[in-house]
Image (cartoon, rainbow, N blue to C red; front, side, top):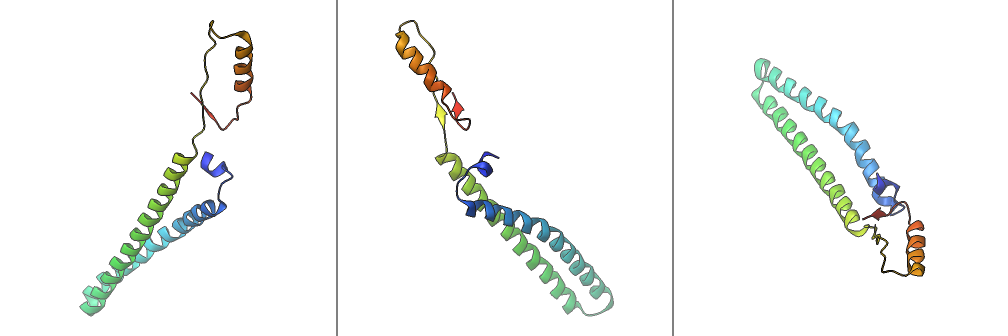
Length: 124
């Protein structure tokens, strides 16, 4: 969720949103189309030519191959973008515990620095 809130490139977010919408529309359409092609192939095997049945089976295989290829390429692309974002957007603050050996002026400076941290930063 932090990646979506990041004010980085809007193109990547639009691509993710577009791919999610396409996935939600294409998945049911591919399933219904594949089922209809297979039902038609079964009907053609029983009642008419085998050539049309083989054509419908080939169409079903092509449909699902293209669907799986698009899904895997899209998923791989978004995983790569996310991993690249994780690698380049690390914010870490190292808090140094107060010690008896540190003079009081340095302790107050360390305290002020820790108060100024951004909410997006990770405290270690």
